[in-house]
Image (cartoon, rainbow, N blue to C red; front, top):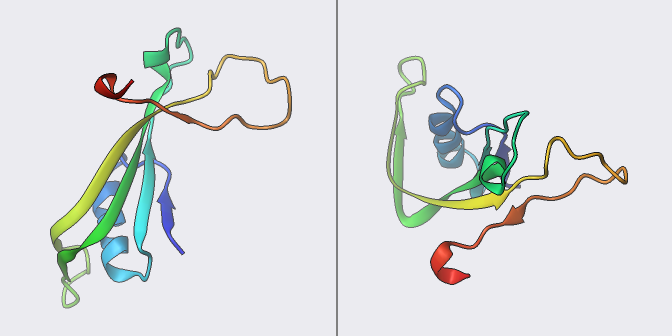
Length: 110
Protein backbone atom coordinates (compact mmCIF):
# COMPACT_ATOMS: atom_id res chain seq x y z
CA UNK A 1 0.00 0.00 0.00
CA UNK A 2 1.30 3.45 -0.90
CA UNK A 3 1.64 6.21 1.67
CA UNK A 4 0.29 9.75 1.89
CA UNK A 5 1.87 12.67 3.79
CA UNK A 6 -0.55 15.56 4.44
CA UNK A 7 1.98 18.42 4.73
CA UNK A 8 5.22 17.75 2.86
CA UNK A 9 6.55 21.25 3.57
CA UNK A 10 6.36 20.82 7.35
CA UNK A 11 9.49 20.42 9.47
CA UNK A 12 11.57 17.49 8.21
CA UNK A 13 8.57 15.97 6.38
CA UNK A 14 10.34 15.53 3.02
CA UNK A 15 13.12 13.57 4.72
CA UNK A 16 10.52 11.47 6.57
CA UNK A 17 8.73 10.76 3.29
CA UNK A 18 11.96 9.71 1.56
CA UNK A 19 12.92 7.54 4.55
CA UNK A 20 9.51 5.89 4.43
CA UNK A 21 9.94 5.24 0.71
CA UNK A 22 13.31 3.64 1.34
CA UNK A 23 12.36 1.53 4.35
CA UNK A 24 8.83 0.38 3.49
CA UNK A 25 7.35 -1.84 0.78
CA UNK A 26 5.37 1.15 -0.56
CA UNK A 27 6.00 1.75 -4.25
CA UNK A 28 5.58 5.48 -3.78
CA UNK A 29 4.82 8.18 -1.25
CA UNK A 30 2.42 10.96 -2.16
CA UNK A 31 2.08 14.24 -0.32
CA UNK A 32 0.31 17.59 -0.45
CA UNK A 33 1.58 21.11 -0.08
CA UNK A 34 -1.00 23.86 0.24
CA UNK A 35 -1.33 27.13 2.05
CA UNK A 36 -4.90 28.36 1.67
CA UNK A 37 -5.58 31.87 2.85
CA UNK A 38 -9.03 32.57 4.32
CA UNK A 39 -9.34 35.63 2.05
CA UNK A 40 -8.41 33.71 -1.12
CA UNK A 41 -9.94 35.41 -4.14
CA UNK A 42 -8.34 34.05 -7.27
CA UNK A 43 -7.42 30.63 -8.63
CA UNK A 44 -3.77 31.26 -7.80
CA UNK A 45 -4.73 31.63 -4.14
CA UNK A 46 -6.19 28.10 -4.23
CA UNK A 47 -3.30 26.30 -5.88
CA UNK A 48 -1.75 23.38 -4.06
CA UNK A 49 0.83 20.83 -5.12
CA UNK A 50 0.85 17.04 -5.11
CA UNK A 51 4.30 15.52 -4.58
CA UNK A 52 4.97 11.97 -5.76
CA UNK A 53 8.21 10.38 -4.52
CA UNK A 54 9.10 7.00 -5.99
CA UNK A 55 12.02 4.69 -6.56
CA UNK A 56 13.85 4.38 -9.85
CA UNK A 57 16.05 1.49 -10.95
CA UNK A 58 19.10 3.32 -9.58
CA UNK A 59 17.60 4.57 -6.27
CA UNK A 60 19.83 3.84 -3.28
CA UNK A 61 19.66 4.78 0.35
CA UNK A 62 21.36 4.33 3.68
CA UNK A 63 19.94 4.77 7.19
CA UNK A 64 22.19 5.12 10.23
CA UNK A 65 20.99 2.21 12.36
CA UNK A 66 23.87 2.53 14.86
CA UNK A 67 22.87 6.04 15.92
CA UNK A 68 19.40 7.44 16.45
CA UNK A 69 18.21 6.40 12.97
CA UNK A 70 17.70 10.00 11.88
CA UNK A 71 20.69 10.17 9.55
CA UNK A 72 19.54 9.24 6.06
CA UNK A 73 21.38 9.43 2.77
CA UNK A 74 19.44 8.97 -0.47
CA UNK A 75 20.55 8.89 -4.06
CA UNK A 76 18.41 9.14 -7.18
CA UNK A 77 14.95 9.32 -5.60
CA UNK A 78 12.38 10.36 -8.21
CA UNK A 79 10.06 13.30 -7.53
CA UNK A 80 7.13 14.55 -9.58
CA UNK A 81 5.29 17.73 -8.54
CA UNK A 82 1.88 18.62 -10.01
CA UNK A 83 -0.14 21.75 -9.34
CA UNK A 84 -3.77 21.20 -8.36
CA UNK A 85 -6.62 23.65 -7.90
CA UNK A 86 -8.14 23.30 -4.46
CA UNK A 87 -11.80 23.91 -3.62
CA UNK A 88 -12.75 27.43 -2.57
CA UNK A 89 -12.57 27.41 1.25
CA UNK A 90 -15.13 30.22 1.51
CA UNK A 91 -17.78 28.65 -0.72
CA UNK A 92 -20.95 27.28 0.83
CA UNK A 93 -21.19 23.56 0.24
CA UNK A 94 -24.31 22.57 -1.67
CA UNK A 95 -23.93 18.91 -0.81
CA UNK A 96 -22.16 16.88 1.84
CA UNK A 97 -19.62 15.72 -0.73
CA UNK A 98 -16.11 17.15 -0.58
CA UNK A 99 -15.06 18.44 -4.01
CA UNK A 100 -11.86 16.91 -5.32
CA UNK A 101 -8.83 18.93 -6.28
CA UNK A 102 -8.44 19.33 -10.04
CA UNK A 103 -5.28 19.21 -12.10
CA UNK A 104 -3.90 22.43 -13.55
CA UNK A 105 -2.24 22.02 -16.92
CA UNK A 106 1.04 23.89 -17.43
CA UNK A 107 0.60 26.96 -19.63
CA UNK A 108 2.28 25.30 -22.64
CA UNK A 109 -0.08 22.30 -22.52
CA UNK A 110 -3.44 24.06 -22.34
